[in-house]
Image (cartoon, rainbow, N blue to C red; front, top):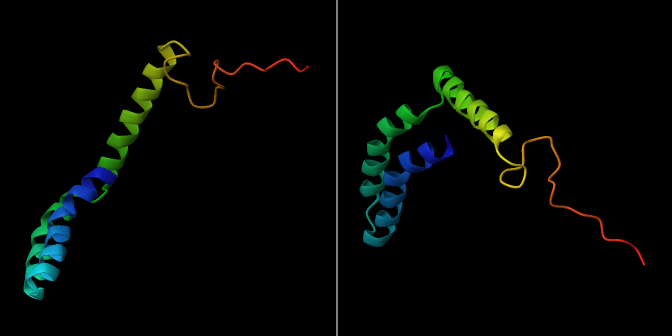
Length: 87
C-alpha cells in the first residue's frame, strides 16, 4: 500500500522540484492535479485492505512450511541463536 501511494505522489514531487527550479508555481499545481487520479486509485478501500490481508496471510502460511533457517515465522524464535558457555 505504501508503495502505491508513493508512486501516486511522484508527479507531485517532480512538479514540486520543477517549480523551484523554474520559479513558477503553476507547475506544482498542474502536477498536483495530475496526481489526484492516481491517489484516488491508490486509496485504501475496504476490498483493497482485505486483499492485502489475504496476501499477508497466504505468505505467512507459506513461511510456516519453509525450514526454520530460511524465514523466521512470526511469534517463533529463530533457531540460529546459541548461547555461549560461560567461563
